[in-house]
Picture (tube, rainbow over the protein chains, first blue to last red):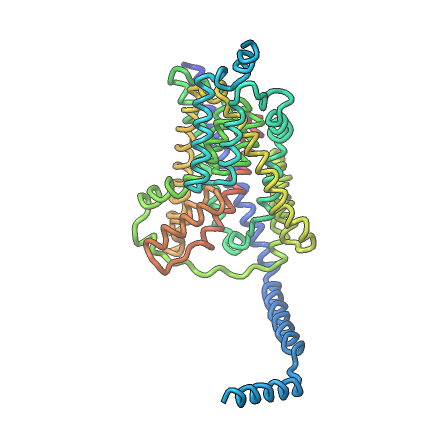
Length: 88
Length: 376
């Protein structure tokens, strides 16, 4: 029985030690994250600008990749007109 | 006739023991839960099948030379499988929500109370005749409260290998039961007004912060808790591969092929520990009860801590997100979101709950490191 009481006391000790250390460790991490966040404050805006520029470039690329050839447009228009006149 | 007798002597029917049949039924139950009910199928299916294979008379799966014997010997006894899983989990984890709101790390810490209080519970259970848990056994059982399968297996393989089967099954079963166990506790400890609290949108996080984060976690672990470096180190490696953006191929392998292959063998090897002589003991019952207790206390501690943060912040924190501190990623965060939506159909807490959720993974790895350092 005395042995069990000792074990229980040990377990309580480990509980306080463990919770204390978990809190200490994660609190240090919180501090670290805050410091890094301060240091990187400008990077968020830079990242956002880079992303937006990439988007603009991509959409510009997509637009320039498929220019409408006036000859093709004319040919399709003509074909459609011919087809409709055949139906009528 | 002699031939027929010889054949009969080699059949399974002639050699079944009651325990084996019962354990095969347990395996079948796990298969049912995985296939029909969809509970953690990725793990419960191989574990269930492993349990069936391990109890086949004369098949020798778990004896030296059998595949399950080697899977266990190579992957679990050495602690390699849980560590490889952690590499994959690291590569799958996005820490943005946590970096944007670092205070949620405190919730991940609070939920670890489930682990440490169960340590006392496991020792107190020795008062009941039939239980003789040592402090190491108690620590291995208590880690179930971390709701993190790989961590539980890693710690159990180091501190109490003979209890590993029961601990792994309990850990994964309770993780699968998160949607059933957690909501009543969450509702009991919060008022409707608290559950309705909307949280501010999280800030954007830069790429540099995300790259520095795993390195910082590793640095702190090296300095203060080297015993946790196997788990935390592999986790951070996976996360750095993901966030650095320069090794996409490796990151994808860790997230998919590697974690999948390891999951198959991890499941089978854990299932192999569900043999009748190892599992059908009174200790198993104790482990299942203590595991549920650890999980519930962890959830409650997380919610209570979040309530405290709510009070201190003047009502800016929804206490529900504390429940996600028990890890079980991403199921616990989804449960928080669901309970939040029940209270207020326009309140989406998922991203806010991901912070404490991934903090819980770190918290339970740190708790495992502490237990290893103190008792290992």
